[in-house]
Image 1 (cartoon, rainbow, N blue to C red):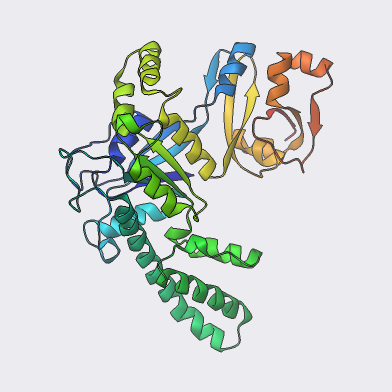
Image 2 (tube, helix red, strand yellow; image 1 turned 180 degrees about the horizontal axis):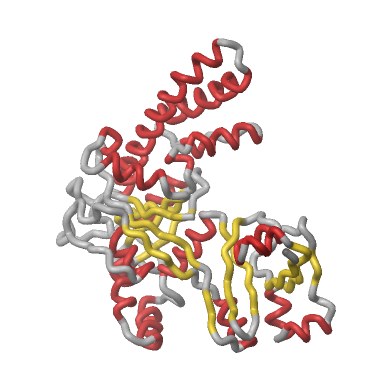
Amino acid sequence: MKAGIVGLPNVGKSTLFNCLSNAKAQSANFPFCTIEPNIGVVNVPDPRIARLEELVKPERVQMATVDIVDIAGLVKGASKGEGLGNQFLGNIRECNAIIHVLRCFDNDNIVHVDGNVNPIRDKETIDIELQLKDLETVEKRLEKTNRAAKTGNKEAQAEKALLDRIRETLLAGKSARTVVPQNQDEVDMMEEFQLITTKPVLYVCNVDEASAVNGNKYVDQVRELVKDENAEVIILSVGAEADITELESYEERQVFLEDMGLTEPGSAVLIRAAYKLLKLQTYFTAGVKEVRAWTINIGDTAPKAAGVIHTDFEKGFIRAEVIAFEDFSNYGSEAKVKEAGKLRVEGKEYIVKDGDVMHFRFNV
């Protein structure tokens, strides 16, 4: 599961990517600096794993990760191949969610491709290009579906009805994610269409250091614009985050954050939000050899969760021994949790909850 960072050139995408992944993607003050998408495997900050480490004292610790993709800057006309449009749009299509970076700071030393700072216009530029590409996809699909629908094919008629609704939405300047599926068949069809604007989106307002806590007038404009989109807006001073990653010690970083009025780096907030955007959650295994966070989809059953460790665990699943993280933390050890009667035995139908500490029994 990957989240792709998109935006116009020079809004801070590659610098943000470097902060998130510590991979040194090239960042420079001119468009098209990023040609190939950079992919970073990013640890998901989670204070629960530090607590488990403190209690279990394992030989090693493994955090959950999420893949972040730095996609080059889109420009007006990308849907028609302007700039490196087709390639960039293809890279976005391969991602499962979009992190849309908007420039919300003034700085005469950093050029803006459209001449001045205006996050509303910038957002609309990107939205329009993505919507136009989706419109092209929908109209191509409709050509084929219309023919089948005319023959009385019920499936084709249902598909045509949904495509027509999506087409009208895109022509009205709205993204396909605003089309609400009426039933499970439509949910499945929407997935099959692989439209770019159905992907969940998170907006990152890149602000100056002074606006890192409360935002500014540009952030207010963005919040007002996206209030009906059911999308999260995160404030981040990408320049300050880059400075924080350069500091050697944890103490120095904490002093820097305190001076800014923050309790943790904004990048940590963003990574957790991206994880949630991808509909991912974490369960833990905790033993003296290793404390580890495992990534699963929200709604996964216990056998599915076991399969993330090894396919044999899923095939031969017998049962899962489950402790809620809060119980493990409160009682301090697996033995004390058992004594208190808080360890549960769950079967194949169990839906794993975020933070479960699990041990699987299986037989192959």
